[in-house]
Image 1 (cartoon, rainbow, N blue to C red):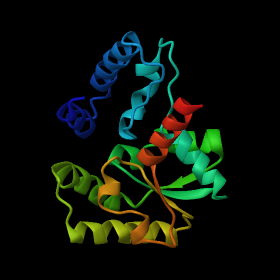
Image 2: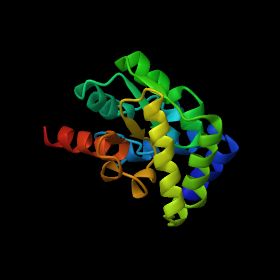
Image 3: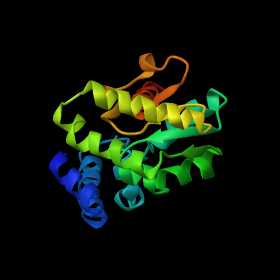
Image 4: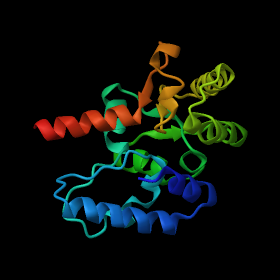
Length: 189
């Protein structure tokens, strides 16, 4: 997948273009013999209903394995770090709540801007700055003070900067890791 396209869609809210492109990719994968479809981008799940429409193969939503891990840990209120569209809108939060009974807290709008800027201007460009790591951890700590029992690392790049080792007492859930583990378990079943 062309990341430059994805970045443009996200930064400019070009969701119709994203849906059209991903629909073509999903249909090509099905035609090539794929037996399961996944999308490892939390942000691009915003249009998942459009790019999965009409497919005969199943789709494993990225929220589902993460939500199952949250419930298995006994949590019901979690924080969410991700791109601005992930944190500021409800397309993922709604799935967590409606399908799994999990309430999702987002950082303040100012902190959402910081998280998003670091993702696109640093992490996607291979820059892992100590100041940015400290800022992410401070935002995770604030989510915890606001009542989050765990924090969802809801963007592919975030675990490149922070992880469980950085906050041993605050569970951090890497959506990509959990998604991939669910796919492997499904394939081996």
